[in-house]
Amino acid sequence: MTTSTPAETRRLTGQLGPVGIVFMVVAAAAPLTVIGGNMPLAMGLGNGAGAPVGFVIAAAVLLVFSIGFVTMTPHVPEAGAFFSYVTVGLGERMGKGIAVVALIAYTAIQIGIYGYIGWAIADTVAHYDGPEIPWPVYSFAILAIVAVLGYRHIELSAKVLGVALALEIGIVVILDVVMVAKPGPAGITFTSFAPATFTQGTIGIAILFALTGFIGFEATAVFRDEARDPERTIPRATYAAVVIIGAFYAITVWAFVVALGPDQVAGVAQKTLDGEGNMLLDTTGDMLGTVGRDIVNVLLLSSLFACVLSFHNVIARYQFVLAGKGLLPARLATVHDDHASPSFSSLVQTATAAIIVGVLALLGIDPLVGVFGSMAGVATVGMVLLMLTTSIAVLVFFLRNRDRGGLWATRIAPVLAVLGLLASLWLVLSNFTLVTGGSVTLSTVLAAIPFVGLAVGFLAWRPSRSLV
Image 1: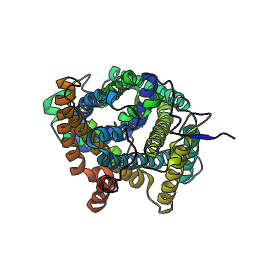
Image 2: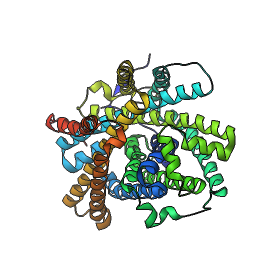
Image 3: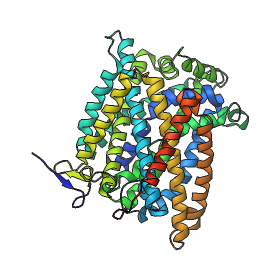
């Protein structure tokens, strides 16, 4: 029988390079899922044909954020992402508050994806005249597979995610090429990027749903201990993840505008929101035929699986780091002798997810609107709050250490990131009912959860052994 070694004597190890980490991060962003879900929302509720610009703006904000983030990386010699950065910049008390927010945000989006994938599998089975099986059955089946992979070494997960992601991106690239080669009534047009187009409607909503598509990109730093050369690998992986995700979204959304026509695309998106069609699958069927539509449908499921596996690994490592610092039970900070993984933390994460999904299922919550919509809303607020606080921490750290780094990376970029993220937070909160699909009262309660988590962690702080 294998044992687990305390984190005080062992650390997580691995040889992940930039490519492996980028796979983990891009998989968490679930690009095909975003194209199928966020794109119609950005177009139908936002600014129609101008939606690609929303994704460009979101990528620009996160790229500016990443400058200060990676510049501070050498001064944060441990995994832990936002928690570690905020602790170094703003102190243990705020660091603990942010740790609670991070756990809330990641857990929320993971639970949301479990609901989404359960619904999606059930819907697919029904589409092919299969048996009617309740969505929780599928969700728990996926949860079991994730539990096995998450328990083992991270490189196994990276390989699984790499295969799923390569197939996912490959089919979308093919679809993009065909859509541009077979344009709609307006031909190949770049009107999406004209001010008169992207300022129509509500560009803020397009930016909002674009931002939700980047959740998890900062997880590059969470895998620090398992990276081959952290000080080089983490910055490269972070910049690459933002650029790849942003370009993938913007180009694909633009290709849909070309295929459907700038005047028609908002209407097609709205039909998807009304349940009268499926923008992604219907367009794929028109462009690639029935076989192509079926392939995309299957890869949409693999995209959701890759997403939930990636978030499982991130949460397990967050718990591992926090336990190693005395902020969670010490048992969570153990490393498996054979798999070199945070095995016990992974098991606890599996149990937590199973309990929450089980409760939501017993309450009869709708898996798509109730589970996914609400949880995605909580996660979005939490992630913007995390990045905002991290940018402030970066700025404060370099103001105290003026001899480290250049003016652009340590002063100007963090200030721009703070301003951009404040604007993003306002956009998220002012349009929150569109994210959750619930009432104003329910949306207010859900939006408050990350802020309450921050307050609880901040107030519950007590001196502990060094956090960095």
